Length: 615
Image 1: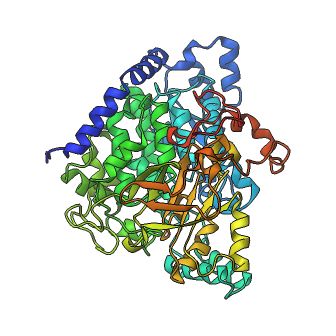
Image 2: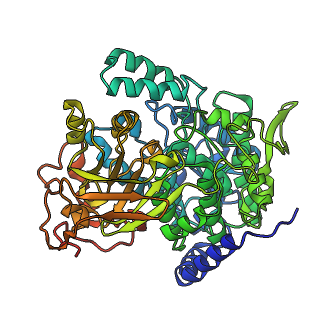
Image 3: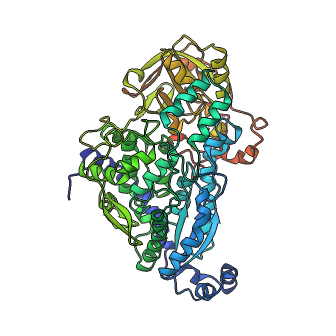
């Protein structure tokens, strides 16, 4: 079925391609130079090669020495503390067996760190979370740097792990690669009930014991957390990028289908390496990046991807901007309601038709590029199919042509909302992002006096003592940007802000920090750049300044003229920014780029924290 591409999608893609012409060409030349005929390890000297297969056993040793079979690198985020990554402990033997059966070889090339924002939330360790993405990219590059490999299998699920693996793997973009997901845990406590209990605790109506019982009922087994935060947004985006097998993202661990998909992903990379199929770097092009943006917007995904997609695109030489996302958001309808954008969880979404139906309806509406390369072959239409195991064999069949639950997933012709719910706001306070998909229309416009805080804990203390009660306010939480303290997520503010809103107060938040998938029913202008620590206008805001947050008009305004003021507050000093390993990341604070360029340390000039105030 051929459809006409939506004109805005075509225009954004054309401008993105023109803007990226030089950088994309340079990237393709670089990976082209890295691609040579035959196994890469054939270029190694004998001593180098012997080190590379010294631990191999049996026939694998001689086959690695001969260089006649493709050798795949397994790069894994396995650890057994975090539920999403714990299943990966079982994967290497399964992957190796599948690769051998397909005519190849495989070695675990290395591991990458996998930290959980859910564990570190509100703690000092959260200040390393965003930095961990670039550490993971570096660790991926180190794992692949031995030049022993003809392809890659990348194992990762959550938050910064998948973007980091992809950024790192793109530096070896001449190789074929596939991502191997682990799947979500079974549904636990309903999300609406979880949110209600969190607000009860924030309001002092229940104690820690009741809260912990609810949280444990929500996060209870192996697999990804089931709400639609960054982890599950990662999985959906990777599938629409064509880097997962069709239908692979949300199949639970410990199922026959999960293992069959894992084996098929491994065999597929062997086949692509043998056939000289398009490499990873060739696949992640302008059209694929636009598709990823559309998938994020249509599903109401995590705002973290306004950082990650920009950084991923740049790693492939594609210069994606927030304006591209904003323009796409205006025409991409919201088709899913998954918590915090609704009450359903990711398992409900998958059962309602999942990625297959989402891709089908977006393709039919001309809102995705069909002509892209994927790990399943050419063309995104394959991703309307769903995998099944019949008589022990994995196969694909047509996915649902209609949503099986219109309260969770809708066609493009009958959306939940006409736009994707990611808005760029601008004004005298800088440029930020607002996720409106979970914010009721009557709550989106807030004009109110500022309450300024330099730390989220100070806001929570003010809430606890009642000084925020009974008044409309815009909470300005500053010195939370990438250079200030690693741009931590501010999840813990959400229940308190929700309590104030439920009491009838007009409330919003403006911050140079992150909210991620926790961006919910309170309007939040996040990722505001330039950040306060680098002299951004947030450093000039005072209590009582009237702030307007109006995502529908793209406005972030202040009623006063702050230009003649001196900054107040400050980022943590070097001495204060220590403990929990933070002192090891001083170089990241000094080198990291702005949020609208992906908040990355790669290819960004260093900047001192002491810069003049933006006038």
